[in-house]
Image (cartoon, rainbow, N blue to C red; front, side, top):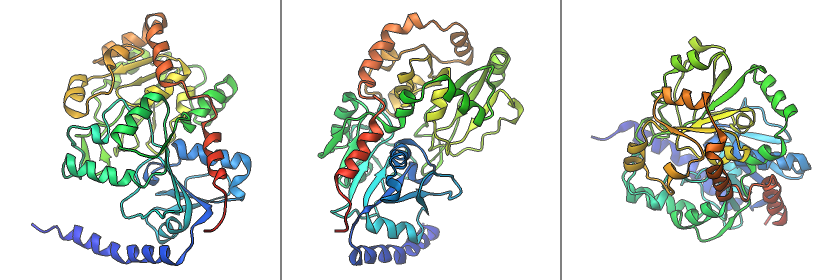
Length: 399
């Protein structure tokens, strides 16, 4: 059966794409124009955010024309930046002219990257789960099958000029899984600079106050990943954890509060009103970097947040309620998660609470040190600086 709405949407795009191609033909590339985008415009966060803020710190936001792509233009951004609505006419205009693209996710295939434009792909995490060409199957909504998915992925990768990596482990995987032929920048992640440079009592207290979090309680950050097979539509995934919120509040409510941070791909209207003053929900639009900094404990599953949070050397507990299914059916892991995870792995809320109440760092010290050595060896607090140095080294002219 013909899907009329899809055909109408495709037809509606034609004038815009013709306009975009025309802009490419009549405009030279401007090496003083830089586009930043985080999570396909969903928020102001991650590596692109901290690269841009390093430019602001140096005053380069006034020497370069900086554009940030957003779905929500009300998001506050510091410095001299022009916010651009995703898929607007201005969006296509700046992509046609910009000398630099800085993004942490793949760009849509309809955006043609010009030869004189430099595309810095910052990516968005050290991989635990299989990626791209290493995947055996694809269960993501909107994908036709694994071979089609891989083909489109490789075509997209061909547009990247540089790729950021957090560690040697990631570099090896990216090179193979993305079939990436160009330069990999093993700088560490710009978004983690804050965890090294601002890990102090004064900054943590300031963030807690700004977020209206209690100063007299410990903070648990719950940040799970998304499941490929639990979705509402393309790029819209469910938050479907079996965690017993009532039990957690009953056992821990006197000494702790819980920050719940959904993955940026999760599209869910979570309601924690009945748990007010114990659960604090931060939507996918909020940058997780500050939440790492203020959290005393991290609860996650198979998310790459573990690789970033480990920089702080604080307790991590892995709530892996669907471990066997996830490992064997959905993605598969690159390393021995069960034996290398630097903290306890639990499958029920009761086990989770017991580990929080009785956490003993000495039990995991050896694993934690090995984990840090393997995954955090490049994070020195200067990744943003190195990327901005790279940008400025390429000059600033109109070609």
